[in-house]
Structure formats: C-alpha cells, structure tokens
Image 1: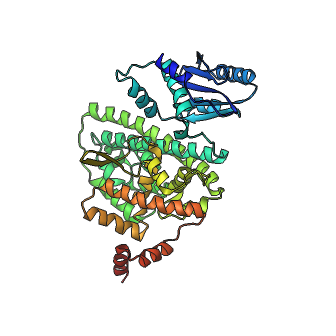
Image 2: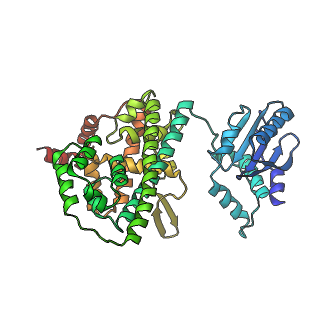
Image 3: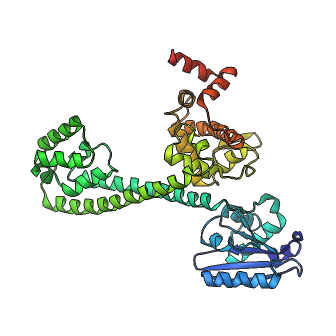
Length: 430
C-alpha cells in the first residue's frame, strides 16, 4: 500500500504519454502495474509469456489510449520481452538494472519482503519520480543489432570450446597423455580427427609411417620436422596403463567430447563468416580495424561496444563507467577505498579487457605501459584494466572524429608531452 500511495503523489507524465507501466517479467508470466495519468489510478494484471497474449495485451493498450505514447519500465534490456515490445512504435521502453530495483526496494523495506506485483509498482515509481536517471531504449540499426547478437553468441561458444578442450585433456591424461605432447593446439580439427582415427596409443603405434604422413598432409601439416618429430614420439612412447577398464571407458568418454568439439569448431567458423560479412560492410569497420591487436574477432566487438550513435556517450568517462573499467571510489569519514564496479555489462567489460591484453603484443606504447604497471607492483589484471582505461579514451576520440587510429601519430603526441614511454621505445629502437 505504501507504494500505491506514492504512485498517487507521482509527478505527472509528459503530455504525450498516457500511462506508465512497470513489468516484472519471468519466463512464464509477467506481473504488470499500469498507472493511468489522466485518471491517476493504478491497475494490476498478469499475462502469460506467450507471443499471442503479449500482442493481445499491447493491442488493447493501443485501442484504449488511441495510440498515444506509453512508457514501460522493465528489468530487462535484451531478451524475449524486449524483443516482443520493441516492434510497437507507441511504446517507449526504459530498461532498468535489476540491482537498482532491489536496492530501491530495500531502502524502504529493510526486511527484504518481496513479491512480483510490488516490484512492478516499484518500476512505475522509478519511472514517474526518477526518470532523469533512466535511459530510453534506442535500437541500433538492424545490421548492428545482428552483429551484437553474433559476437556475444560467438564469445559464449568460445567459452564452451575451452571447457570441452579442458575435458578432453583431463580425459586423455588418464590413459593417453602422450598425444597431448604431439599437438600444441588442442582445439583444432586436426587434433580431433587424429583422436578419432587413433583413439589410443596402441592404435597410433599400429598405424604405419606412410599412413600417419598421409594423415598429416591431408590436414595441411607439411613441415617435415614436425611430422618426423611426431613419428618418433609415437614410436618411442610407452603406455600409461594397460587396464582395459580404464582405457575403454576413457576412450568412449573422449570420443563423446571430441565429437562435440568438432561440431562446435564448425559452428564457430559459421559465426566468423557471418560476423565478417556484416562487419566489413559497416562504415566504421576501417576505424575499429585500425586498432592494434583488434583483428577479425575483437574489432567487431569494439564496434558493438561503441555503437553507431555518436551522441550516446558525451565523454570517454561515461563509457569507462558504464563498462566497469573505471574504478569506484568510496569515502566515509576518514576511510577511503577503491574497488571495481560491480554492476556493469559483463560482456562489454570482457571485450575491453581481452582487447587491451591482446594489444600489448602489437603496440609499442601499450607493451611499455603494461610493463611499467607490473614494475610498480600491479597484478596482471590490474595492469590490463589500467591499459584498457587508456585505450578507451583513445578509441573514444577516434570514434568521435571518425578517424582511424595511427600508432605513429600517437607516439608523436606522447613525445611532445614528454612521456617516458616514448623514451624507452626510442632506446629499444636504437
């Protein structure tokens, strides 16, 4: 009732908005609180999570309010509910971080009492009283939205690839550890094919040298030194165990993981082709490809991170805070402490951290900056986040000016400013 009473005292909506709606969503049903601006009344209802039901509910709102704008607040910035609502032009969507709602609820209910209709009403209250702190969901172009889905999905598949590779390695260590020494990369098609054709040490040693050489040639392994090294290692290897109960069970398990990895590798290649097709035709592709270490995988992710709307961020500091790269300072009395941000888009922060780590192998100043951070006692992750902090400021300026990054030009800027990074680079070059 406290929340309902507060809605009665809510500030009036804009002249073009007929109602405020808060939606507490779930997989099966959605709890809805509707605040009618003209009547200053609230209504509660529950609808099923079915496309037909959602469409019927929205069309009912269109008929009731004559197509006037309606503001909707929900704890979801992407996902099935947003996808269902974004196709209606008279709905204005305000996604809110779930932590915001949780903290807002806890501020007035320390007992942490919670139910779905109350959360829906809280969303309406946030929208009516604190709209200046919320942002309207503005869809990017169709191509960029598709690219966003592709790069995020691909990153999840890469995570699955790492997990499967680790499972294969752990299984092989139980009965066939020698094969791990024969192949440096364990997440390749040639590794998978070799294991399927030669699943045990006995099977590998039973194959003739001609058969093994033919296998390697068919999989584009042509270096004689590498092939001869593997042939010698196969011949001289000793079985870890001859216990059939171990070997046969581990072989069956290994085949299961390898078959999954093979299909996963093919799927990642399909994603790579789709990402390349969209990214190379985008107007900003040259800009984001110009950054050291970006490459075909990270450059599209940088494009997705910044987007197409140049007015989205008014300064580099905004994206530093939003992505979680910029640390948070807390002060209370004489105490002061700094920690990283806990509420931020995980994939976005992951993108900047992974690229910063990769860039130090391709940029002189980035490598020197990282080494200096390590020398003063920073951990690897702290040094990488500090490097990402500097990179985002550079990318933001290039993005705003629509100018590709030029390493030589930036080194000249560092030289004019007397940066110690340039002195060390000059020493190494000499």
